Image 1: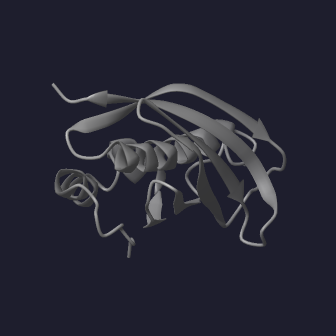
Image 2 (image 1 turned 45 degrees about the vertical axis):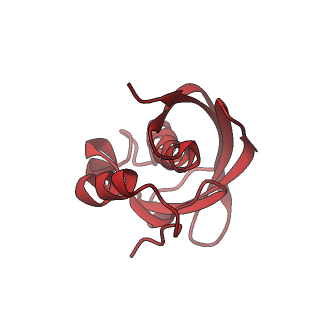
Length: 142
């Protein structure tokens, strides 16, 4: 069950509930556990997200991170606004072949027009797998 902030924009809440974070997040098996602008947590199974030799695909790390960073930025943007990714980078430190990846997203900057988050992926034993930094531009809805 996902924990949402009390002041979450009702429209964003409805979108998160009805889409599960979007089609790609659902396909990847991403589960959002805690969501806020400042700190969010999600997890993703390794199974079904591996590359040809059985390691978790590096792109899967980035999909998990971007999914979490985008939602956190959208929460910060607030009602009548939305977030669009403008920059992302990833450093992969360790491989994984089974189990779950746990992602923890921490806000670095929460501004009026930009939000930057660091997302750290770890295995179930707490070992760092990858580190992603993502910046979103915050826009007014039309």
